Image (cartoon, rainbow, N blue to C red; front, side):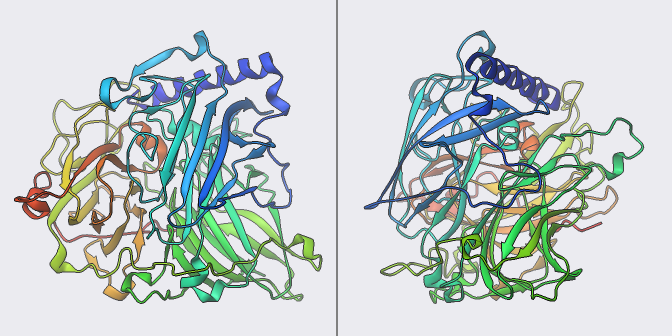
Length: 583
């Protein structure tokens, strides 16, 4: 399954299984429920850890909606779909995942994923296989932890996740989603995702203390009303979107509804849980952009990297949120004199080969005096010390290796000026690559050896270039990285935030210099083992734009300094970040 054609076949296979499931069990009305267009935004259900343990059973279902789209969902007891999981640093997470899809011929095995010592659950992947990635969390990539390469839970099977949140995990917003290579995009588009909160952000960002907090989960899905002719294609988004599952379908774009008190401040926690759609969010009051006071990106409080245990606030009028990115910010409700208040996402210029991401409204903001409309509970500090310096005090003197990597794709979009002979993909689709400079372009295979080997304790600077004519979103599992340059322009030290996902702008096909980001990778934590890095536009990841990295234990003798440089080539100073532009 290395190209779009195979992934479309996979999506239809899942659709067929879901249809069979609904017909056989009558489950269509009971699972993966979705609100109506124009509904009020309701908070996801909440599950909290108790006595240091979050324990829950999640059942995995699919069903088919009225437009023939396959819906995917994790459901907790009581019918709670995609609950927000609330934990504290140091808590234990215990999840019993049960794949409730039917077994039989429609779910026949399609790929041997693992065997022997690396097997984790089943060894054969099916079209209805499932697992969970705990996105952004700095936990170990071991079986029953956050391991996605070989973890397979097939229909009728139960799998136990059991791991601890690091005691120094930054307080903020993370998320969980399906992550089986080759079928990740349809599962996430179908809704197999939810938020995770690590408590304690008010300890580092006092400005949010006492504010009502609103969780906003942005997702995408196939179009409910695809156009019947090509004349309007440039106006048509590749995907519909939803907010907390409230659909905002093309071409009607009827927004959801957010109710706020006039002039009141709220703490909004926004996760882009889409598979392929970038968001550029903006709050407009009578057409005027409002200040959004950002307190965290990707689970890390802004400004906490300096080791002072006090965050800073970054004010912007719009926020580019790549696929899988999170942003947490304070917004003030409209006054009674405002006639129209809206949350929107702007149009994204994704490049000549990219998806169409149109401007569209997400929610109308309406005033209310009913306290039941206000989200609860408010944000409060937690007892004890909340560490804010997991990523503090990294500087140039600590760097142990430099590497150059690049995104490219064949045959559409090309690989820039270095199109390798004999590496064209099978006919009928595009193959996507993330390549270490000096290595061959190779679409991802689950059982491939790691493309990068490093050691625990290493601090590495990676430059990631984009040699394709569409944007890509760089993401690495298990760790965070600090953005230190964008397109070769250094980011001032005081503005170097930490992320786990960041956008790389597209190549125009002419420039002698590729768009790029330079990121400082922090391997000083407790993560040892093999995991992945990839583009988080999941159609691209499914199509091959992923690779394995192996972090070995720190050892005497070689240590991380000279051992880590093995597979990188010489780095160029480069770029970083939200470089997509609005059309």
